[in-house]
Image 1 (cartoon, rainbow, N blue to C red):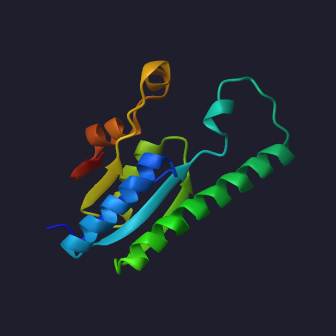
Image 2 (cartoon, rainbow, N blue to C red; image 1 turned 120 degrees about the vertical axis):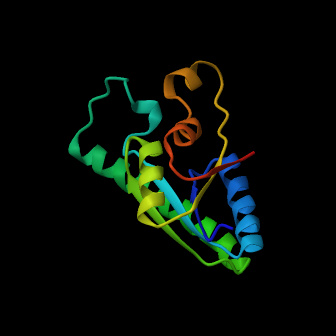
Length: 147
């Protein structure tokens, strides 16, 4: 039924569980996976704090973000490869992850977005919003939310 899954991941515990769920699902379907990570150069904890950053600090933060994304994607690929599921990965810098996820699904020709439910609660959920909910609202293709 599905042949190519886009699996957005961010390294959180629920995202790691979704990787395992997506690999099992893809194996059952005979599908391949593209793991995807959209990241901001600035950590969420720094956004809106008025912190002044020099070019060296910004370059360092960018390097750390890229290394973290590469690690997260490599770990996900290792899970898929060990299960014999064909996979690839992509990481991008984008401050609007839900848009990047939808664009990546189209770019890679995916027919299903398989993503974790992040279940943010309280004030942080109101301020940051739910990327999963935004993908559900705006995506033109099926979205499977893994819990």
